[in-house]
Image (cartoon, rainbow, N blue to C red; front, side, top):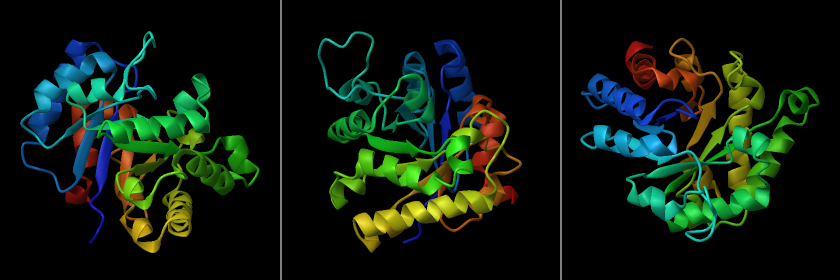
Length: 254
């Protein structure tokens, strides 16, 4: 069975709950005709409720941008998987490069977060990607394989089937630079091969792998034309309903 594309919008730390509700309503109105792809949005925590309310009559999945590795406890300022689930979330980002960089999240912690997401019946979108220095040093594939092994290597094939991977070269996030479709495809193919070697060929064929890094309406079709790219994790272009909807509808305008 062909992998259905997923277009996901990461709103990051932008907007008030009222802004989030307005953005979600705008997206809802632009997607009245069901798109040919799966769609998800990841608002800031305080905007999850308004987004869920605005999108409840649609197929758009709302997710969290992070979660704690524990289900509950004395962890001031954190949000757990069960809390996200109760708020109406169906997915959660784990290991985004900004979390790795600014919050110094380790592979061990991210592995625990993946398990916490699965326990809460959330779909983890596990992010991986290299810095510019690592790419220039010829270490991009090694870095990505290491990150994947640390975060996902302990899963069974059944558990892995509930995970989505997102490749996001750090040097192409929020910089206006974007990996060429060929550069992205090379890493996506390597990720799929790694999944096949670590688990099995069936897991590799089924794995949905997204590309994240300055995806815009103007470049999404070229990126999505590559055989191992199954969707996009969109940052800045997801903060405007019309630009995000144009990315979602890429197949109709290509």
